[in-house]
Image (cartoon, helix red, strand yellow):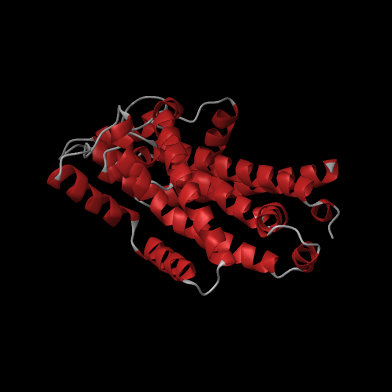
Length: 306
């Protein structure tokens, strides 16, 4: 088990190194941020002063080396736009994204998993048809469109919910539903697929032959063994929700990480974008590592490579 964990941790470290190099190079292809920081008609000396202040006058390998060295000391650089430490800005926005993600994930799981299970248990019934329709709509309608429709209905037409901002529970209802909408459809499809595969297995047939109640067969034998793929998707989606909610947070002016990333990209704020993307990558890698370890405890065949 220790060898399995060390192997997965090594793969996780390699993934983070590749991610850091990729985002470091790609963000610099967007242009020179110094041009956005000076007034029109600024001289070359003004541009050079800005570049020197933020270390942009050095070669890319040197910039990357400085970035990595500072990162190991906990310094992710100073935001070019806000003129504050990028990591401090990230931590300031993190609670709002955690709150939004928690509510959105709860909505997606409460809606998606039960519908998927019912759909698998009652294949080709009206329940299954509704489930398939829900999955198609969930994956087809983008979250920003759902958010705009909710805003138009519940904020503009009826005035029941606030259209933007944060601060109360009422502010989070529409952004959370818009964000959890797509993921609930994905959880429905995964739960249905996993349950259908397990329901046709030999041990489920044997449990039925023993005369066990159908509810016990479904809950204890079928769903427990179908939990691995659902757990994988939920774990990955948990981090994706937090780091890919750029559009939803922009629509509802929600002060989270997604909106921070949008602001960083718009202003070519290299340190801010690097910090936001890298921290998102760390979350994804860590969640995947924990899920892999949890796999090994659920199914011993995985850690023995069988």
